[in-house]
Image 1: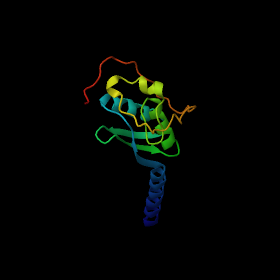
Image 2: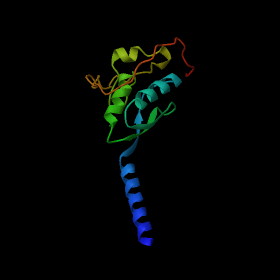
Image 3: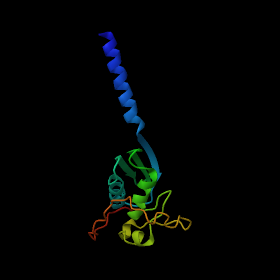
Image 4: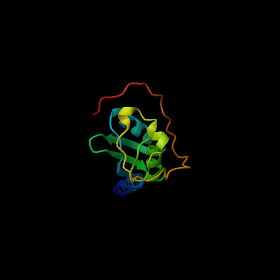
Length: 139
């Protein structure tokens, strides 16, 4: 009986360790301005298979993301964000994507940003929503 209990506990710990090993958490710098940006950024990230959670912080411009590293990567996550119109540490949004953002979401861009090095990416399943014309108060 005691041996069965120890064996059961060992199997449970092995499974828990295996599941935990596939999860990764990161903080990624993502440019944005307001609550509409927050929604757009988080939606772009959560649309990817394997993302468990995504929380963008407006004050420090950082995205806390947890994901299964067997299903997605930080490159795919940052590509999805850039395709939604926001610059990240790794990728810059294309000019057309950035220019489609509502006026309140257009942040000051760094002149030294990476130039669209996510072109050709097809990993994002983010779908842009139509502009409502309303902008949030952020400034």
